[in-house]
Amino acid sequence: MAALHDRPPSVIAVATAVAGALIALVLGLLTFGVQATAHPDGVPLAVAVGADAPAQLRGVADELAGSDVAEVSWRVATPDEARDLLSRREVYGVLELAPGGATVLLSGAVNPSGTQVAQQVLGGVVQGAGMQAEVVTLDPASAAGRTAPPAASALLWIAGLVAGAAFTLVARRATPLGRLAGVATTTVLGVAVVAGLFTLWDSALPLTAAVLGYLALVGAAFALVQGALLRLLGIRAMAVLGPLYLIAPAVAGQVPELIDPVYRALLWSWTPFRFSTEGVRALLQGGSPGAAQVWVFVALAAVGLVVLLLPGQEGQADLADGVVDVGVDEADRLPGAERQHTA
Image 1 (spheres, one colour):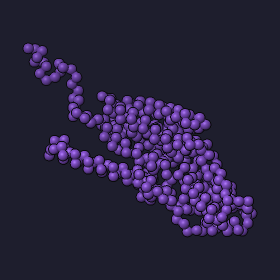
Image 2 (tube, helix red, strand yellow; image 1 turned 60 degrees about the vertical axis):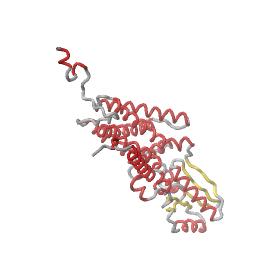
Image 3 (cartoon, helix red, strand yellow; image 1 turned 45 degrees about the vertical axis):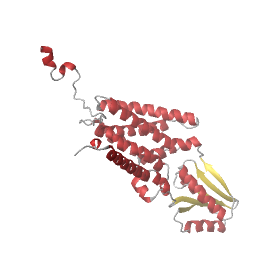
Image 4 (cartoon, helix red, strand yellow; image 1 turned 135 degrees about the vertical axis):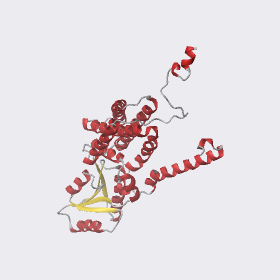
């Protein structure tokens, strides 16, 4: 069967156009589709009423909690309980009801997409009830603070991706030891780049040992997984690693309650970018990452390290010109060279 490049140019043109359209379809479904189908579904909010609040205010809280609205999931709590829920990111916003007026509480530690929806919903409730409400943001985050968590994840992925792909293409004798040296160097330099950008964007962003250590864990896990796939598949691994970068921002930038259930199950549930984004956000706001946000990267790093250290054949880069390196480097070792010397 003739190879594609041996066929007429018109056939090649149609085939490549079909391939481009299919790739665009897949990427469109996996990236823009997440945003295009975003819709609130069970957004967790809290309504806070003090124990000594008038019966009228408690009636409002009970009415909200009992409302049959699929877009919102209400919880009734005391003001202290509600603030604790908000600090632990179990709710995205709180409506505090008091005789002196209402207060809408938000938090800079919550994913900005969740905060935006919470403010819209709570503002609508206040307006519908004919009340005035003050908006208070706990642990406010600057524009840089909101951008930094997803940016750190993307930049660490890109650093490892470019370094690993370049090593696979350039290194004539790729070895596990060489890849591990690349992983270590990429991790250190990647964290340095991210930390430098954080300082440039907002010098108030904390660069504590916990923040830098977590960034190093994420960067090492990314680089090890990338190196493992590149070792197994060669440069063909870029067909998997590249699209992951395109998918990640669209998924990690949303809270699960805004993602279509299909995308939530197929993409959001497993993508490591959401774990790293939320872990960095928690640390930048003075908190700590959850257990899952640490152990996911420990597991990824361990798997990648095992694959890199296993003895076996290295995946070879596909040479564009079809030339195969057979290991003959000297002219006098070519076939016929010996006869020429003895003539």
